[in-house]
Length: 452
Figure 1: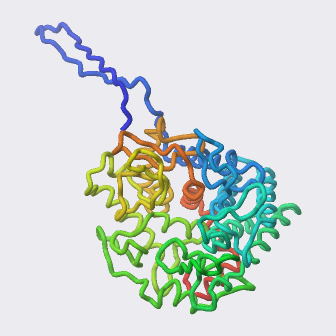
Figure 2 (figure 1 turned 180 degrees about the vertical axis):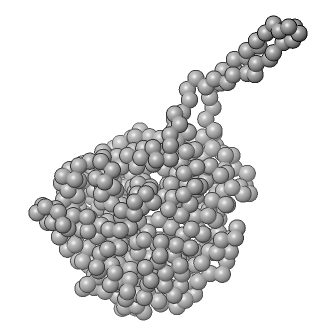
Figure 3 (figure 1 turned 180 degrees about the horizontal axis):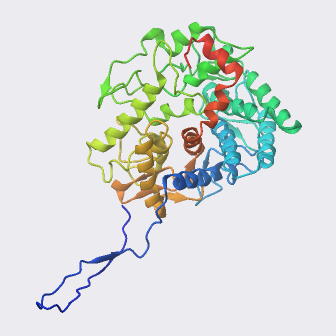
């Protein structure tokens, strides 16, 4: 993919032998700038360390929370917008940073305390945080015209991180126990039941100005499973099992009989019932929620995610649109920055049914628990092309070999977070273990009749 100047040194050695024959030496190919070869473990170390910088070095200065986006070429771009869900991913990433020695436990505790104090004083709507916050004031920043209130899904992503922080520090020193208690109080203040609007379903948004006007149901299958599980786990604002069955599972019609490349899709992916949706469906809900032995009356969630990742991989290998470089070491379609037709940076949810020749590194990297060999091969490909793909906070958000190695030299919190977290779950199960040991989470899973 990367154009390198290769010098070919042709050596013809004439050796005088008794029979006066000549011996030909083959060409020696010398690369003047070879990419160092890293082992799988070294590459995983590097990826986690570099990606961690997004949530540590480039976090919002005053709040410590995760910025929605970071553009190295224009650091002031949207510099004050904090993302709720991305901050939840950041909380988990900081725990990984402690375990990997990127920062000390004390440094992490201080940063996390700063973030939680910010969240404690930020705008909330029946306990739920909005999608975006002003990093200086904690005031809501509207995500769209009517989306200026609570965002239950972004809140769920944040709560996933809060629960992991609680479990990680609950047996620590006095300041750590205080941090753990603060995380526990924050997540338990979310009034999940309010967001049913009196029906057996959860709704994504509520606004003090527009109420439930957006009226977006949390209906599977997509990235919102974690919202129902946390809503069931809430000690004070729990939903009934019927909300899960009639809302998320749509009275059982969520099931799918579709098979692609020999892999059962298991559940009907929203908007993509034949090949599955963007790969973040297999990531966001499962950063803390361990799918390994997770099942209910509708699905085996390990099989679901393994199939989803493999279908996405096989689609790229098949490469029916003949995009340059697509194959066994260059794959991964998910929501990310994208290339507009004029070459500028846009955004779209890439998937097999919305494939425009743009690869998102987070797709393959974050799928490593499900497709370890395929994900590692992709990771080696990304590193081989590090001259254009590796920036100051990990691998850039998206690129396209098809369009002369076009690269979106920018980052999004919700794409960087799953990489460091899912790599750690693949290596040690850290976040899965923390989240799944929480007593309230267990009660929620039991209430919804999950096996885990």
